Figure: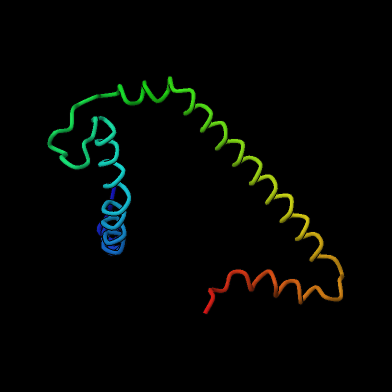
Length: 119
């Protein structure tokens, strides 16, 4: 149960969270809900009023599609290979830079410089 002193602490927190929540709903949750709504129709992009209701038929069609299966497998394979490669290379580089090298500072600067924006 909230006491009077707890309410005094929660109200400013809610006020500070409110702008972030509004932006979250406008730029993230709103487009997601609208995209899901569109996915339930045979959407006519030129004349949206002529779109026909399909329900979950669009999803059943895509699940039965072999090209979709291949695309999912390609995406998973690419993700696993790139994540594993970057993890191993990053770990090896970290181990190498943690050794007592003479030019350790130079290589650290090179790694940090990648995060600087150009110009």
